[in-house]
Each structure stands twice: as C-alpha cells, then as structure tokens.
Image 1 (tube, rainbow, N blue to C red):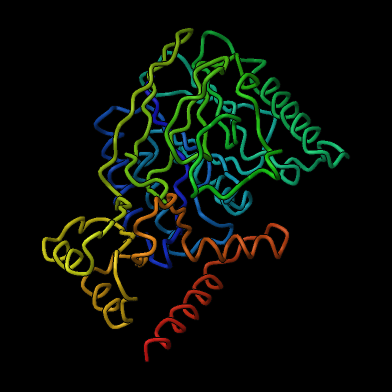
Image 2 (image 1 turned 45 degrees about the vertical axis):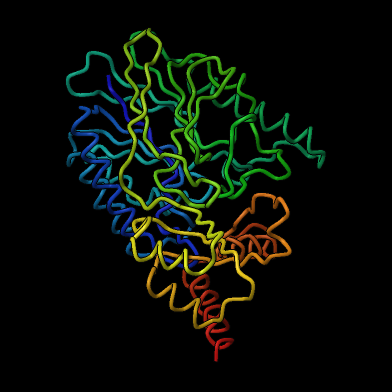
Length: 390
C-alpha cells in the first residue's frame, strides 16, 4: 500500500497581510499530480487544514473543491484530522456527505479507529486518528495541579492511553497507521508554529508514541523530520508552504509511505515546486545593489525580506518605489554604519499579522482573531505608514 502523508496546510494564512490563496491553489494542483504519478492509494492529512477557526469563504471553497479532486471523486480515500488551528465541528460539519466520496474527517478525538478497504490492496487500512487532544476537546481535565511538570506527565499519560485504546485491536493482517497533531518533545520547530502547549506542558515524549503501528503520521511542526526514539517509524511531513523567514532555505515536501502488512514502513520525500520561497536579501552595497537585483529580476518568484546597508534612513518615497517595483518585497530593514562593524545576531522576523495574532491570543485567553479583524488591523497599520510619508 502506498500512502501520502501531508499536514499543516494553513489555508487562509497571510504573510505581512498578503494573501497566499494562489499559492495554496498551486499546491493542491501539484498534490493531485503527485498522487496520480506516485499511484497513491490513500492520503493522510495530519491536521491544521485551515489557519484559523473562522477561515475565509474562498479558503473553504478551495478546500472542498481540492478534496474532491484529491480523492479522485471517491476512488482514493482521504483521511483528515483537525489540528489546533481548526474548528473541530466546522471542519467536520460536512463529514456525512464527504464520507460518500471517501473523504473521512475527524474533528474531535474518539476511541474508535478507522478501517478502510483500499481498491487493489489485499490488506485493509487501519488508522488510529487522534485530532489535536487538548483538555477542552477531550472534555476533561488532565490534572488539578498547576505544576508544569505534573501537567506534562498527565498529558503524556493521557495521549498514551488513548493511542493504546485506538490500536489495541490492530493485527498484522492490516496496514497499521497512527496519526495525530501533537508536539513531540525533541522535534525541531520554526517561528511559524503558534504554540499548542502552555509553557511546554502540552508535549509528548517520543518513546510514548504507539508501538503497535507501522507508521505514525504527525502534524504541527512545519519542518519535515523523523522522530528519534519512537517505538515505530514516526514523522512530521512539514508544511507545504514556508510561513516565516526562519524557514528560508528549507525545501518543502510531502512524504510518500510504502507499507506491507507486518513490515517496516519505507518513506521518501517528494519535494514541492509550488509555493513562493522566503528569501533574505542582504544589500551590503546599498540602494544601488537593490536596484540592480530588481533589474535582473532576482528571486522574482519569492517573498523577500531586505536588510540594506545605508548611511541615512531611506525616504518613504524610495521605499514605496522599491516595493512598487517588487511587490513581493515584504519588509525593508536599514542597517547603519555604527551597526555594520558588529556581528549582529540573526534577526527573528515575525510578520505583523502574526504579532497581532499573538497579542490577541494573550489578551483573550487563547482566542484567535478572525480574518476580517486581522485585515482591519493591517489596513490601519498601512494607513499609518502611508500617512507618515506625506
């Protein structure tokens, strides 16, 4: 059986207020091509379909249309679980209709595995799917203690118990898969994952992942990676798009998993062409160097963050000219002579919409701002910038 593992689509995500729907459209086109070329029998999507609990209408439309094509209109099963960014009920609202097209969506955690017959395969596919398991979604408290270590231990134990229940009926006569949206301790994160744990408490040790499976498909971390010390092969497929400049230079991919009943899974990466890469420009020769790069159309398919060495602050008129000539140049950071002789630490860039999201969550106790509110905030910020140039 040949499976495709993907996760963390984050449909509706923006970068510095710029829409990325077109990039998601290109990704889904490529994903369908990969499934056809690689003869994929079923698709595993390990959470964070959307970027917020209230995704834009165009994003939802793209999702449903893309799932119809990805499933080859019912010929190829697609199994989806919710992540911490998804609204469990909203994501799974159409599950009854979608199930008829062999699209299986699980919003809330359950104690029942999913078993599916795959056309052309002798063994059935058994999936122990665990959507993002928070206390609120499991509808129970893990511990009455506020101690971080005790909460971590209780969470680890709870996730382990759920996986034990989900996999206890698995046999060597079926293809045995676990799938979840979790933060596994030791995984390599980037700046673009908004945390799902409080002070590191919502983490699971790799050794506690299920053993009675052949492969565990994980979501949440945006960098593709295998998990060390797991009882069975476990992997984050990573996100299909780069969402922060900490991911600059990293190739994006999906994971293709070949499995036979009773055998160890064989995994390979299929690298993606779609999606604009995130690139950092360091113009040590000033504005002339930037204009030269623009004339030669350097990185014209990328989102760009620019560090420019200058003696004086560039005027707003100069900045607007550069951004007009290169619309995908997102931020311009001047570096002055007094700083040029120093070894500066690598800057951690966080997009303005991401900063607003983090602020909103802190002020509301974890709620996520909807798309309209974020867009309003960005409009105000842009008005302030434009007003400063007059």
